[in-house]
Image 1 (tube, rainbow, N blue to C red):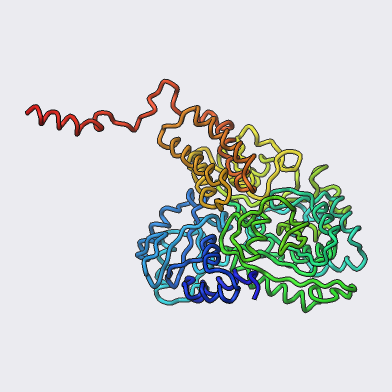
Image 2: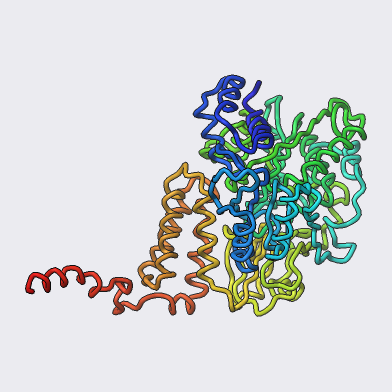
Length: 574
């Protein structure tokens, strides 16, 4: 048996036993002919694998900043009170285990939790009491779980919509009968499609590089590990039009000559797995997948889904490939691009969900359709997930070039002050920048916009972001491992009123070191927001920091410190 089966074998144990016992680890080690230490290393890497027994119901409560501002603490307290269990502890309760987890892709419906990976949204203390009572009464979790809809709040007029328009299965790939790999690459390049996961690497360039590789074995991977806090736009595509994404993968396979594809679906989206697999089965029945697809000679392509197990860093393409190979999801050293040496050492395309869906529409609708949509360098539309202090959180399909001000108006933001673009790894903007445009020429956005009003604590926002990166860092490289800890300590100083102007400068200096020397995007971008915020919200920080002549030891009480000594002296005198 191949090591690539490891994640699935671990999931089987986790699902059936509630944890992965040592006996199972020994068995899997024999089966895959690898050491038990290696398997334990993989288990410990992922949030959703446990090595100690858990209760019948494992509850993961999202602790992202949107959740924190929407009542997280009350919900957490209610869960603990009703279950008699403490968060993060293995206490042999046969019924419940409670854990906090980072963003689960439900920022527009917070507070939210996963119970045995079924979603529960818009939680209130009353709702939590009802849920726990039902579970104690053996009502199946799937019967009481929510069925979160994609809150699609805005779509441009019909002749400008790209994603959320009528979808007919096969419309895109049927065009392949009259296309060549070169003509498809030209279409993708003409529209200037760039990666929609946040890196914005030109898609045609990536596909061409893989196509030109002479290897006979190639792979197509869809990165559906949407873990950036505040992002849930890929989930909407997988819920509404999984077929559109799959057709994009088939088109990519046609161009580069790949025979196998994998959708890497984040563990938090496990409830979408059956729908995606049903769509894949239907594609096989329609001869959209399998052998001689649509009668095209020697065009064979098979597709499977791999479920992740909770690791933000696996959104980085080389970490994702390592995870698929049954290893810890640690990013590779950038010696080769995946298009040269990827999955199992073979040339591999890794693209985001939205990128594949967009490629599919380009082939279906033709390049002329995109000519008058967007800006000169950013053609078409972009999917955004908007959450926070807005009356209409949800999914917005916007035309490239829209201003932040227009977006705030569409989403009915209340007193917007601090806006986070692309999630914690992106950038923050203040109200002087609300006229900036969302496009490649100005403000690039991977997919998330979080809006915070003037009553929200910027310190709390930044602390949440830094805590997230600190816990999600894989720890393989020192700049990220140590740098995020240093930034965390700086925010603690800020909270305690001990921060100086020197600290603010050191935040920027450390951020620069991390950006230049970290192995992957997590470390390179995790300091962005903190460093930017100190400049863009300087009035706020100037009120928070100590002046040069202030006593920095505000927490040090001299009288208290020498009290015992004074008492001894006094007693000796008596």
